[in-house]
Amino acid sequence: MLTVKDDQFMLNGQPFQILSGSIHYFRVPQEYWEDRLIKLKNCGFNTVETYIPWNFHEPKKGQFHFEGMADIEQFIATAESLGLYIILRPAPYICAEWEFGGLPAWLLKDRNMALRCADPNFLKHIEDYYDVLLPKLVPHLITNGGNVFALQIENEYGAYGNDKQYLERTREIYKEKGIDVLLFTSDGPDMIEDGSLPDVLTTLNFGSRVEDSYAMLDAYKPNSPKLCAEFWIGWFDSWGKEHHTRDPKDAAATLRAMLEKGGSVNFYMFHGGTNFAFYNGANQYETYDPTITSYDYDSLLTESSEITEKYREVQKVLKEFVTIPEPVEPPTIPILPEQKVQLDRSVSLFDTLTTIANHHKHVVPMSMEEMDQAYGYVLYRTTIDRKADMVMDTSMIRDRAFLYINGEYVQTVYRNDEKKEITLSFPEEINMLEIFVENMGRVNYGKHLRDRKGIIENLWIDNQYMFHWEMFSIELDEVVLDFSRATTERFPQFYEGTFELTETGDTFINMEGWKKGNVFINGFNLGRYWEIGPQKTLYLPAPFLNVGENTIQILELEGTKQQEVHFANKPDLG
Ligand code: GLA
Image (cartoon, rainbow, N blue to C red):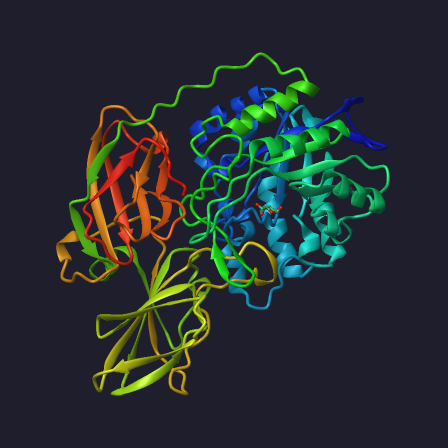
């Protein structure tokens, strides 16, 4: 069992230094968990850490998902079989650049419920989820013969709220449901007071300034062990911004400074993985900045598991402090030969609405959450019965939308536009106004966390609300297309093609010539692409491919002349 004695961690009575790395099972195909974990162990780590995202496991209220990439027990078992210890962070809020910080979108249907505090409704939803999740974790606790030796309460709560009752209650829920291992909170050094509980281990999240961070912990809780629960050795990227990297030697030097002082560490990230499907989060400070599909994070293993210079630099430092066991040979992962793949069928989204959308009618526009839709797109439609120029307030549209009048595209509006009032010209006595809205990822941190999507309040157009709307909710869990009804060239358009493989392998889809949208491989949503970068390729791991026939589908939102994509043999993250 892991315990704390003065400023030391003790494992089964012996002093222990936690050398941990983060790997998020939900960002890696399950066939590759073993590969990533073997490389973690070979590098010299003794522990793996993962968050557990609530929205991945309970996508709709009461519907639970623990299969495939969501098979947390299998991930734990794989780590156990390699002799690694495990830290779990069910939180239930995880931040992590993950959609809504891991909270399920359906929580937002109740406009009155407060998040991340002791609102009884919020707590009840947590309990319902933990009733299903925690019994799966309990057999893996170190106290029950497993390798899970610590769990986190909430996540950087000091950077969100002041409700200690809530922190206490989440701790009690763990206890009531059989979690009897070491518990901890984690926060940036200047926020530990607000995020901590007096008798629960306080840990620190930082990327540099080891001494200052330790000093802040000493000032707050003297003589406690130093665990950097998130050692930021790289960083995530946002669309339209630069690609982040961190110097390997600098990261290694900071690690050495921690280990020399007897500190324990969890690398955030050891291996970042991918924000598949619609699971990227977003940040909002000055502007709304959605996170890209790759979560490479400039970590020790690349998104496709290549060993980096940073891995080797870190390994050198770890070798100074611990004996690294004989390396285990990881499985070989082949790379596909470079090739072009044709997409020879296409259909406008407007022509295949019946196969991809759920239809709703309501007097006011419904937000996504009101339609029980978590992710994707919504097409809104209403009638404007006036021949006039009209001024529309766009501030209720989340996040990015294309406007069409009588079937003709007129303009794009985006949440970051400074000008929130636009003039629309309606040429006929009776006009059809269509607004196609993309949810680009809910904010995962800070005061804009409550981030409802679609059209979130009725639109104010020329000093009036417009009533009577039709909504087409497009979640794309399955992409079934009807090519027989292609009547219009209007974008968004779906493209589809098939290709044969004699062997599978990892590849990187280069999206040059395509503007913005999503790629689906054999029905699996690989994630978003956007020509503004920084990322230019999408990682396609071999397990999503078949020997024999494969289908690729692309939803291109804006327009392209391309009819093919290039499978490259290396990534381009900008
Ligand atoms: C914080 C959060 C993490 C992650 C990092 C940045 O420390 O706790 O979940 O968002 O920032 O990558």
